[in-house]
Amino acid sequence: MTSRHQSSLERVFEPPQPAPLTPDQEREAEPTFSGIVEFCEPIQKLEPYKKVTLVRVTHELCRSRATF
Image (cartoon, rainbow, N blue to C red):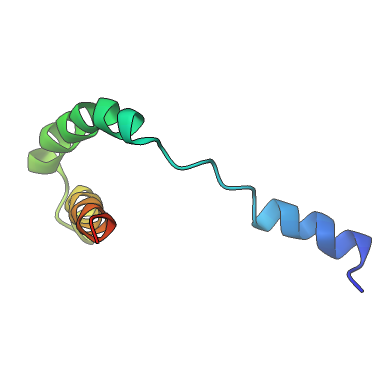
């Protein structure tokens, strides 16, 4: 049995996830996302790691997996 405190803490640490974007929303958001990455990637700090590059590569990997 889950205690009342435990269930309220679970809502804090595991907030509800937003619904995934529809294909139309993805197409609409892609130019904005790409523009932000293209602007920020060349000027990012290299240490401790390339954060914008990590976001871009992760995004590319997720998109390629979505096609399967």
